[in-house]
Length: 409
Picture 1 (cartoon, rainbow, N blue to C red):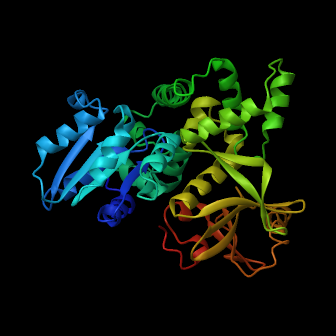
Picture 2: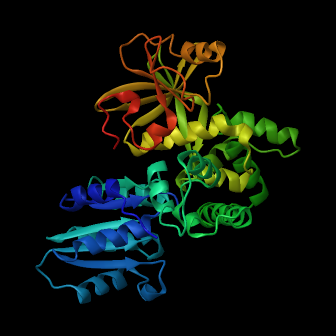
Picture 3: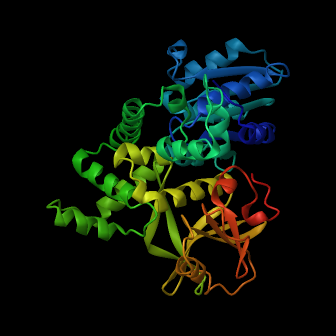
């Protein structure tokens, strides 16, 4: 079972002839390896391709920068166009030197992948500053999830059932290759969390108090969609007889961000036109991982829906902040070159009071940028007091945001 994620394949094509290394990043198990294999296969009729997968034992001998250079030279002819693709490049010692050397050669394009943001940004910025571009791969969208699900033997579910399954297991493709039983899904999600937390955070940063790290992670994950400060987490831990410094909490949250497990979203003061430094929201790199940490609870649907919208906005290339105007909070201020959009996320608009509360968040906005209310309610009109009401699931399946000229990409 496999799908072609054209959004990413097209972007890789666009970057191919740029004078820069393409760094493919993203949370583990999001499908980077499949994407790079597909990309390599699509190029073989037009240029030489060297594909190194460090997760495969077949490339166990490629351990150092020298090994990588030798492997590339032995597999290609000099003077002809070639593409070097290295998956999980951080497993090669001194890989930065090899990448910088290959990138400096004429007619050689380099594509690398890694699962740790700091690894790529810090080390690439040091050695080839200004000569690399990044492409973050996100978990499956709802549309991609449905496309892959339909390849399962005997697959037959309606849109509502498919969306409930998506909420339950998230968008990491590997889960759709299982029998989807609760036992298997829960175990795989827990194992994925352990891999990300232990392999990408605890070992890399030599964290000694693993229990404290897990407690901070659990608190942050359980607070998805809520404003949280490092001090608040430290105070909670103190109430549980676990004393820790605010700086330690901040460091651990940063490490989780480096591994793409949690992304901090700052508040933006709509009146003062500035970013605020405390009380951020945090969103998971995949909603299924939340269930692997704190379990699945239908009562948390509001935060989960926000998380899905956040991921989709980021996938479409928006910069996202939380809008603040006095006591009013707008879930997302989404910005990119084409403009800005204010987005509020709701579960159901079951009463006039609920509608009024959601719309009130926009009251402090004085500019003419679009305002969009996303919900699962199919019965409300498309326009609510000048605010565009849109089906949340339609948006997650790729519909333009608020029915605008947004291209869905």
